[in-house]
Image 1 (cartoon, rainbow, N blue to C red):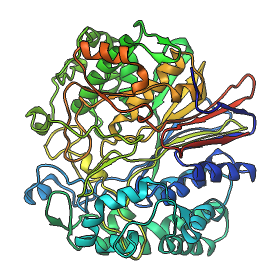
Image 2 (cartoon, rainbow, N blue to C red; image 1 turned 180 degrees about the horizontal axis):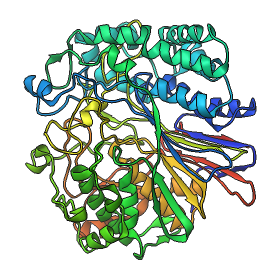
Image 3 (cartoon, one colour; image 1 turned 90 degrees about the vertical axis):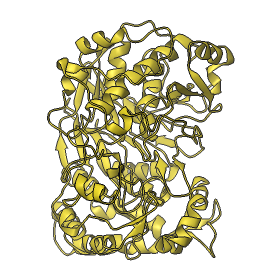
Length: 595
């Protein structure tokens, strides 16, 4: 099979991400003696600067990580919660059926700063100034704009000029988007970071300095500016103007945390590690459970029609369960959902024809309850199939279906990180002038129905699409991978996993192998629609495979030859000491670096 690049192999360290500048920054930290945690944090902050249409300081960061010498995997929860004032009644009183996808009502507590700093404090070795310096440099001195940034700005330029004047001042030049490839700076953000560092430098000791910077954000000037900004109503994609409910007290009351991952044992000594019930991560485990023992095959690195069909039907079943059962609720029967017994009870639903129904199951004999918006079928209508290499589809109102960046790192000691930062992208809400960034809109993933696992409630985490992955083999963590892409994240990761473990392809070839995804599942993003039966494929699957899928009842959309996913991955072989890295060629910006 043709591969766009070689799989990187070395012994010192590997960094793979969705932007070459982030990968280079992470590798520079490794070369300077830092470990995988230092490198991931440095890369994560660079991504906030160079991919501003996909993430920012006002967003969040969920991650999986393994420390050298330990066979355990942990979850970093850098996902902020719903504010104290975010009650269903408050939103219903505004005449809303859904949480808007833009503006201030959808803001949760920003989690990225505290998440990254907590990981750095507890597992890194470098100072905050050392790892943050790369991002400050790009914000202060400038970076080249990738094509998608001006394209996104152009789409929402009218919104900026008519309603979000602070964003217009930030992102437009004489009323027009900056040119692709031009040098762009964000000195206000650089000043904010320098001010946080100054407060950190006022105390002694690496860990104490990091904690001081955390407090300066959550209990200092950053939280105060966010609070003040949220009190003024702004236009959102509901068509109205609404003030936010996020306050400085909400920010001061929250901090990042650690928890155990969901771990599922698979064939051939593999175990998959995912974030649990408050993310869509368990859908990958459910899909793999449903496909266990089935006849799956690849020819010259390309999945056969039967393999794609079975995978897509497994996807529909897993994501139907996501809608009915997942959420930040201790009553979610997550162990039952990912069990072999439950998968066996659902496997017969995978037939020879494409299903056009949304069919959640009944784990532990419970009756499934779908959100009224889904159950009524109101949003079961065509959605845009335009897909730009895992980039979001953005409307003129700023509505964004999907988003996100990703970074994976492994070092020579065996430390490993997989992180999927997101939120606070430039089109999500107006720029806060004093801070140089905007707030995220992750609360749009809550439902405004009472009594569901993912119902909106103060202090609750939204059921996010962000879904980093890690895998162990024979009890040792050996693989970290992930992709941006909203609802597609755990579908494109399935394509990668099958290509790697069933097709026998190395990391780069598995990423390059043709991908697919289903739009026959409700979107997690406003306005929460979906298209029953729609299957988007890369044309490299082949004309005969596409024809066979159409004959089976799939409503196939040809997304182009190289259009789906922004995967990256790193791996280690404990026996040889070799490290591996690979990154997505689609879009010409994801890169792996290592030696």
